[in-house]
Length: 278
Image (cartoon, rainbow, N blue to C red; front, side, top):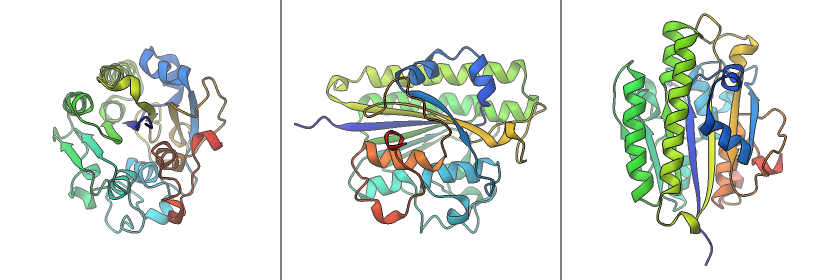
């Protein structure tokens, strides 16, 4: 009997790579130690806003194709380039989305949702109180990941980005990164606590969308804003492998590879590649 392959993607908004490397983040470090931590260079044609970057992560194609250029998604082409949760669900996989703060990922606000039709969507709106939103998203994900057999799950954490906007990249921002890492640890512990964990093949991908300038904010062309990162571990990923610089489009490609859908998705003209092939 083939062991079931499962994927957990954790999207942590607005975490600068240089800060990540300086801050105490034992749980993200553990993912990297079991696989890799690699920089992502946001394509020059992609604005350094959350909308375009998360859409590229979710669809596996660039902003020129999915059509999202800001945090308002109106005019998008997501029907032609759907997200990996929706396509995996249509292919017979069970999928889950947990968001606690940013509406257009999960709802029709601002032209959304980015993730059109996962099997289960949990959204708890706390407005700009992203710390409370992240806690709600994590609590729901702990319950769902422990009890249900999802093939692909995406959990979004927005506190770091909102802290950067409000207070800049300083002590409070660092504390927000540490809070996000603690929530990553809770999600990993939940996966390991599954009664069927020993028989499952888990891929874990943590990814950020963009950076921040020192004073807080993004949307420009500086290296601080255009540098993101991916940390990942799982089957086919060699611990300690040097990946070079990746692209956001690689995430969706690897999700499909990990759950055995690469051939089924061959007609999508994805722009990324699975991590192992890179």
